[in-house]
Length: 329
Ligand code: AVI
Image (cartoon, rainbow, N blue to C red; front, side):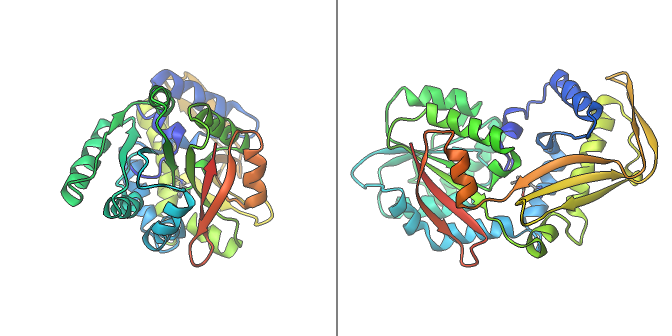
């Protein structure tokens, strides 16, 4: 599984066909049609997302990587870590560790006393990461945990050891603000006072930068969105004709939310066998596929006001495209 998948993606990766059916039916039956972006990530979706992360237009991954590459020491200072005090460094989502490696290398070099605990639903992703890290940093203490985030956080919370949680890649941005607040509250419920969360978020910036990131010239992001229709065709026996759906993202800097739509380019009917139902589309009708929320201090603080976290610090890249916030319980 890949690095920047959000919590819902990870927790649903072992897609339960009944939930999948129910959620697709609900989304397509609504007056304003939508589909859950957590279902983007099947095998093909994973591969497309890896491509997205390397696209010239998709600045998000590069900006956060720059922070970790050039400001690991600033992050360590902001986390108020102490070489004498043991802590657990817990990452939500295993991924390929590209960014985390920069931090791990620095913590290891400076002889901090910690265990790195990546959590992921995919044992395969964890095995790959462990193999890779063992090769590159043989002395790094890595304890992989396979399972769902909150179950594992709860079990770890019982040991009362100081904790730093990593939730990177602006994965939080694929949640609505209410869902994000709920998600953060659940994290904080499984932490002790003074524990930290390092949260990576994409910052609000002009449409001239954000829109191309979701509408790349090679059409990879379009394929990423259309792949969910293909997935529904394959897994639920649907007959979406992909040539009559067009990827059309929208973003207004004043809203700070990039929205990806697939637009029906003609009036059409789609039948989904396993739901045993037809869905009508009028010409120009949109399906909301994904939101990618962008943040500033005000928006983040509004979300945090519903949780037990407060902002202690923030580190940005040289263009101030992306921020890693240090939050404290
Ligand atoms: C995973 N997530 C933070 C990505 C984003 O930027 O919202 C998913 C993505 N969708 C299209 N491009 C990338």
